Image (tube, one colour):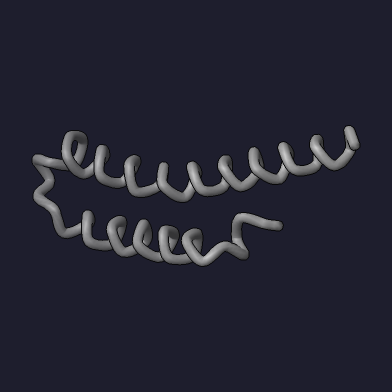
Length: 67
């Protein structure tokens, strides 16, 4: 199973892109403080979903391979 086939991943990715577009309207004084933190945190959700899916798939493969 690929993480891209999960319902949560496309929604998280879409939201991350919306957040990125919206962050372009933030004041320039926030560029390296709040804006950077918001963009990184929204992207980390997609990364966490991908890593969790890989971990679950790997665990499942190890269990079936050992039986």
